[in-house]
Length: 329
Figure 1: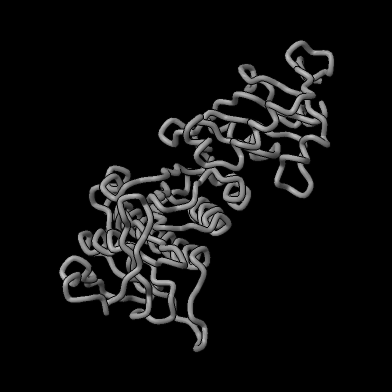
Figure 2: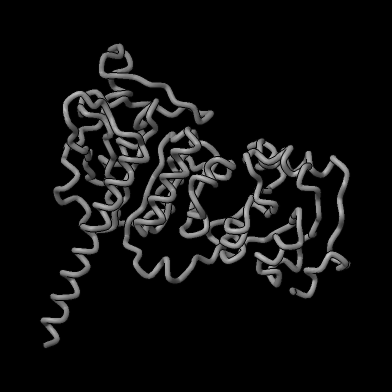
């Protein structure tokens, strides 16, 4: 058994009151509280282990049985308070049907300071994902999981996206937050700081018709106003759509550092995303679909396009290696 893993250890506090449990629930459910306090809540031994491996700093750990502690790398919990609570109490503020019996509060994670698993980074390609107004938590979590699986170099979230640290996002992402850099709540003028200078930005059109894809404009408070080409002439100069060449996803588009923009299903792509793609000579990518199917979910479109982008970039890297080898010999 681990050194301080026994019920009699001085490091373990038994907690029977409700005040601290309510605080934990606030961290889990309130984005404003998470932002103000600079804390995030992770539930389950696997997610906690992933966070610890990435160098996240734990503050408190709640557990219902000593056996739950033995599932964790306790040498990385030296600075955390260990608090034993009743499983019945844990059930009242966990949003899981069957709580896993262990929850931790971490200092809010900074992607630039985290250490990502080497085995997950070896196959990385110069591919980035930009999430534009993704507001559904389950969708964003699935998209992050796809990005990690495709070996992306990073994910950028614009203002207007759901909080990346919301419990439902964390569950759907299955540890993706700790396998690649995730930069949340970015203004559009901050995006370029996180991308290579030679990047080409493409946008994903997940509708069945290129002309029907909705476009939105981000307002100062991070919300979006949807508009179409039928808007009044007075706004036409400001809101005119950038001209992007439409292209099917399986044709060549990822031939150097590449970023893909995925828009939300309700508001679609923002005007800022289209302008960024136009500035970098990007394209509007679409997936051909059978008649009668209006659109793909944002997560499905991201999955298809990211893995195709990865395939094209790996193919390009392989050709480059072969050319280099032939020159040597």
